[in-house]
Image (cartoon, rainbow, N blue to C red; front, top):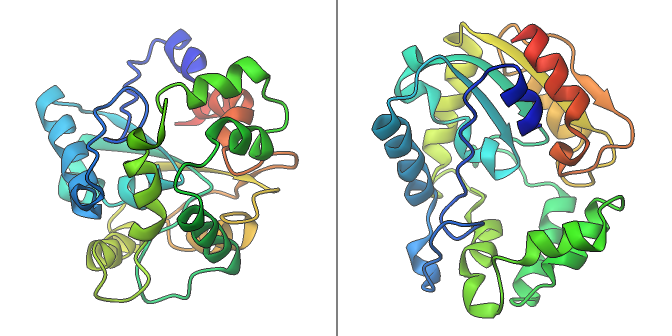
Length: 232
């Protein structure tokens, strides 16, 4: 997706969450919280003074990213949203997610390359290894382990109140353009979750349905990016 956006002349800012990718990886799991991640992104937007933002979100990028625009609506013009949700804490978590969380908690040194190839069967061994490269051993995976347990699962959980505020923002205050794409083979945040989210986002057109797309929809994302360039 990034080459498509860049070729269109857009500035593309792609931060890794702390604990992931090329970002620092605190080893203490207690460091990681919903607010910790959200504050780091809000600070990034402020430090870079980003404006005319087309917010592109997927998975945790949406759980946290969808709470950002209400803090400074004037900075955001458009939204591209893929396979994610809002963690409002007042809706039951799906069986698919609960199964994933249980698996993650039982496998603290999970095989990231294997998991990525399972979710994206078209990835080569080299591409899967690139996903795993930032995590040479279990000590680098504190952030990875923590994320599934940060999804708000009750009204007073961290981030739940912010997410309910965000739900109201997208329903009543959002004035920008939107585009939604759904990976139809996602067992966790697939069509049911995305159609529910679609009903929250004000004036969002009918979603693009990617028949073969899985959870990590950016790996099927070139055509989605092209449509975003045309419409957002």
